[in-house]
Structure formats: C-alpha cells, structure tokens
Length: 401
Ligand code: PMT
Image (cartoon, rainbow, N blue to C red; front, side, top):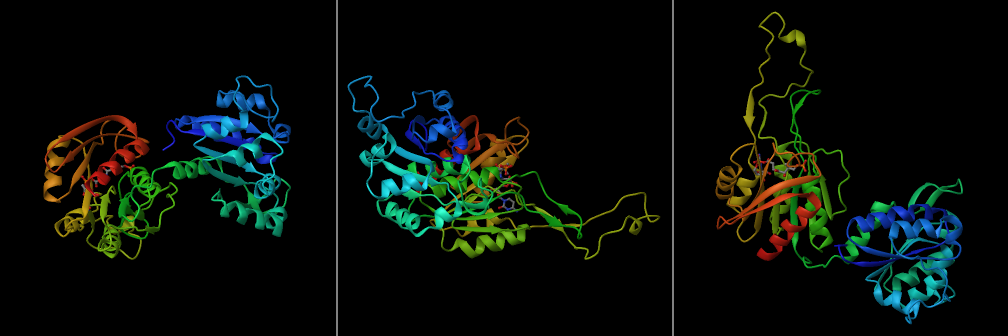
C-alpha cells in the first residue's frame, strides 16, 4: 500500500535515468510522497528541474547545501523515508554502498538509512556480470537490501544482454509489495479469473467478456499480503501477476479440474471467474461448413448445449471451514439474485455487480459492487478501481480467517 508512504528516490548516473520521472509520477498517483536525491552524474542525464516538477519537491543533490532549516539533510531524509528506492542503480553506487563509502548525498543517506532499501540496477552486461559487481550485489543482499532483477534486451550501448532496468510500473509494483503488511503469511488462496471458452469446432467458440482484471487484482493483493496464491485463469489479453502457481485453462471443465487439484490444500477459494455455463454437446473435429446447412433449412444452424459443472456450488457444498467468496454478474435485481447465489452455493460472502452499469463488471478498470455476507448484511460501494476493490475484498477475507 503506497498511500501516505514517504519514498526517497535516488537517481544515479545512467541512461535509464530517463525513466525516473515516470517512476515518480506512478508513485505519486498511488498516493506516495516522493523526495528525490540525484548524484552529480545523474544530473548529466536528466535535469533536476524535471525531477522537481514531477515530484513537487525540492531536489537534493549536494552534501554540503546551505541548511534551509537546522536539520542535517542526510539524517532528516533518511529519517523521513519509509523506503529508499535507487533507480537506476549504477555499478558505481552499488559498489560504494557495498563498501560503506559515502562521498555524495545519496550514498550518505543510504548509510544513514533506517528504512527498507530497494535497488533497481541498470548497466552494461559486462559490468553486471563482472565478479566485482556480483560480489557487491551479494553484499547488498546480505545487508537486507532488495536488489531487483534486470532484463535481457538490446541495451543503450547497443549490445544485447542482461542489464536493462525494469519498467517503471514493474518497479512501482515491487515497491508496493515491499511496503504492504504481510498479514496473510501461511494462508493459501485459490483464485479463479477471466472467462472460459467452449469450443464448437476448431474455429469457433462460446465465451463472455471477462478480461481477468478483477481476478488478477485479487491475486496480486493476496500475494502482496504474503499469501501463497494459486491463480487459475481462462484466456486473457492482460499479463498475470507474479503468483506462486499460475494455471492457464480454456474450458469450464478444465477450470473445475484445476480447482479440484488445489482445493484440499487451500484456506480460501475466490471465484472471480466468469465460467461459461454451457458447452456444445458435440465438438466438431472439422470446421463446420456453411454448406452443411445450405439447402436443408432457412439459414439456421442449431448447436445443442450441455450444462457445465457449477464450480462454486460443487466446492461450496464440501468447503468445511474454508472461506468461499463468489461474485454475481447480474443485469437486473442484483441483490435478490446475489442473495440466492450466496445461499445456494454456500458462500461466506458474495460480491454483486450489475454488469449493465457504466464502470462496472466486465472489462472496465473499475467496478461498482455490493457485498452481501451470510447474515444478509449489505454494503454498497460506489465506482472504484478494481485494485482498490481487491484490497477491500481481501481485507474482508482476512477478518474471517
Ligand atoms: O474479468 P473482468 O473483466 O474484470 O470482469 C469481472 C467480472 C464481471 C467477471 C467479475 O466481477 C464477476 O462478476 N465474476 C463472476 C461472473 C459470473 O460467472 O457470475 P455468475 O453470476 O454467472 O456466477 C456466480 C458465481 O458462480 C461466480 O462466482 C462464478 O465464478 C461461479 N460459477 C459460475 C458458473 C459456473 N459454471 N461455475 C462457477 O463457479
């Protein structure tokens, strides 16, 4: 949770410094306060004015600035920070911190720091793979510093290899992870997400509009709070979060089987997926030709459907002490239908969304929901980002564990 957190961003000299403004603006969008320290060589790559503007704060560069108040600058910045992020982190700054050298404001704040420290390295492959850098990174890890991985790509020096800094959104997500209280350690979650698809023939299928955003936000939040997460997802176009086990499925039958494999070991099952309720009775191995129906009827082609298993209902009946959270996608009378599903599927609580409302349900980044518990208590929530809603849902689960 970044809201209200104080973050010092240290920028060192490297071409990846061009990504620093994006890091600051993403941190601030999520409610963090950001103060920037630049090493003198960082100012060769990006101007302090840019960083001052995006952070809405004075940028700190030199160790011996005139004191504006009688605070000792490196100590007050170190005290202020909930987390110090160094991005990009050059081989030089990594080496200095590993060896306790503090010859500029950033390295001095790092040494005086008492909060979490995260380094996002960025450098040439040979520098990264040099035994000196490898040893220095291991030393930092030994200090408890979180050193993020780098990516393999064509680098600024035109060589292909490892050493590219993670993207701003990846760095911000990992910083968020570091600052989130780990209150779900030891708890095992199974979360289903996205649509399922039911093949008619090798070309066509039945599906729905689920994007996976709601389920992925829940999985990300549960993982961030320390839970062990199995995410079972139908086909989606978005990148799944980093979880312990990710299982990609196509059909409702496959989703059922995947849940069955992990159900015995879980404490919580969250059914955010929109599984197809029906599948074609007979799958055609070959593409159904238009000519198959031509001349035999008036242009209609009938497909007989069979009912799929109801995953939530099946596992709700045998859930024992596990927590089951379901969703209901309704277009009318959502509270009445939601209550019925809650009871019939033996859920602990249900999240009801009216998918006809603007900003609710399928595909959108936001949702508008009511949460109904077993005692028929109903809470209504106005339009909110699915990430925010996921935090509320996971906190409700935590209260029941
Ligand atoms: O993925 P997004 O684009 O972010 O959209 C989110 C969402 C709209 C898919 C999500 O908020 C949601 O409402 N998910 C449930 C969709 C659904 O299938 O609703 P339902 O009312 O048909 O089913 C009720 C519950 O039974 C759901 O928890 C569902 O996962 C479960 N179910 C349904 C059918 C089935 N065969 N097996 C099931 O387990």
